[in-house]
Image (tube, rainbow, N blue to C red; front, side):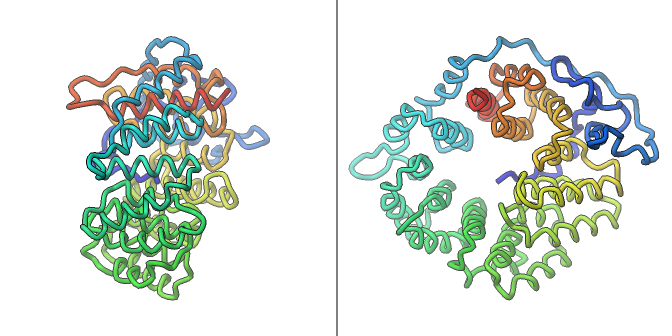
Length: 428
């Protein structure tokens, strides 16, 4: 699940130059007008400007964005090499997990062999690294191998009994289906009260998506405890709403109307299919707009609506919400809005999304690459990596070198390279 950046990250300057065309990424029919940012550049079906009646805002002159660095054209062989380079140095990290999920999706047998050898390594009958083992078992389950479900359940029982919950444990349990699904859900219910917020969040989210009542006895206490992380509390509320728990509405009201952080609440509502949480997202954003400071809530809401709807039923309503918020405050985050509206099915913003990807790839050379990875994942889903509007950014991302001055391996850049390679291979 994509979570919004922290306020510290959000106040850093975003790509101010998005409104100007980037070399190799534009589509002349859909370029931005240079005055309102990428999000206001979309056209209606008739070709008229969606925002023509908006009073023009006075904005500082925009600086031309730097060009993407030259990179050799990506090929199938190079993309496969980029993805396979993770093998031999697998570890229980999010970067390894994302790359392995790409390889599993592409049915890469060598990756499955490496998982068994490296992540599931044992000494004297015990896993060398329980967290790595949980990740390996998740990957095998993701590949469709439910024969390891019992092994994953046994590992979970041992770690939970020893109070050594690890981040990838809940993810492994979330992929168990069939006859042992109920056993997995009961263990996930125990993980909802984990001391590790990441573990608790994954467990709550999985049970919510499955609409499982397994954790019903814990949910009200989790949501009502102000000492808990606000995101964890919100996801507990979502689990109640999605399982028709009679206490869900009251718990949601208390959370939204209380002192919890608005953007963190909205982040916690980011659960696939959690349409019952949308009214509370609307209230949280409305509250922030009334206070005149909705930047963080807006960004979180865009990402949550993407997670809830994607381009499925209800996506048009989600787009209308975002556009309505922008109409009330045109200064809200245009980059995240462009990303969200495109993922939610506004195909008129494809050229703006391509320009945003180029900018985010450039930004990732020195900073955070999360938005670039998210955009590349959508490019993969749509099969657009070889489209001329996206290809130069995909090539540059796949060839990006590790950032300087990083302690240890640069996992952010590893994730970016893998996402670009995966997008390219998915676009064959």
